Length: 123
Image 1 (cartoon, rainbow, N blue to C red):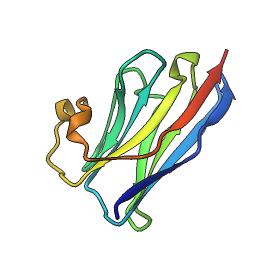
Image 2: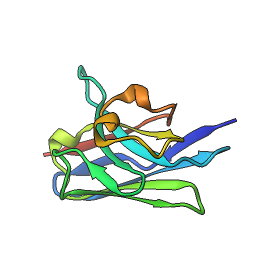
Image 3: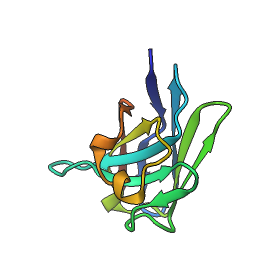
């Protein structure tokens, strides 16, 4: 059975850092990504990694994404957090390595999803 299990999250202050992790069980994936969803908003793309990383403009320069292929784990390091980063964060995975940066924006392109974790940034 394929599962994505997330770790991390919590309550931090603006300017702080936080790291999320997501481990895949049962299968390894070429593309792994992070999305987030705020109250009343649609789920939005944050970052993805396949052959190279790609970021949403809103987090570029503050967030980094990395992966440990041996552990089948992807990490989202979030630095200089802002209150507007407050959201429920989800990891996602897809076996294809051919997804483009445009494909990343569409949640339907990701086959598997983690359980989600809350990140709250206080001002």
